[in-house]
Image (cartoon, rainbow, N blue to C red; front, side, top):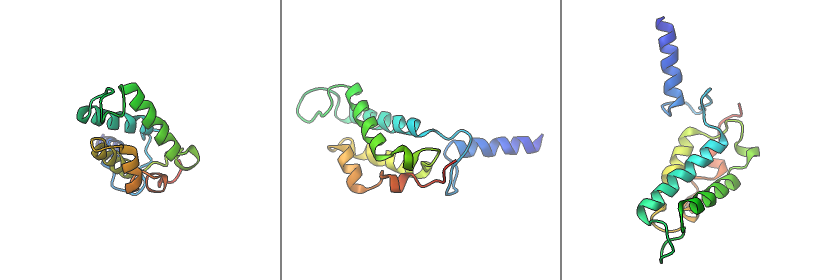
Length: 131
């Protein structure tokens, strides 16, 4: 019984982002599409909190749907299936990318800022071995 509890605790810890190994391939690892959606939602939520949606000066997106579509398209282009599919997105690198996009979401074109910083490139994010 104790062995099963320890195994379950390890599985939960590794699937929740507590994994400190270089590869985070677990049974519950999010897919590439889930990571793309997560990045878009996090960035657009931050954008909305800072700038709000609308058509006034300084508002790039008229509504959340437009923001989500833009970020989903950009992330899908930056993380092609050939490079980032099959569980290849590193959780640690993804978290770093997501934090970068949220930081620059309030200061201008978040995507250009992230690309300029290089924290979200496939070479940085898609470093795990394929599953």
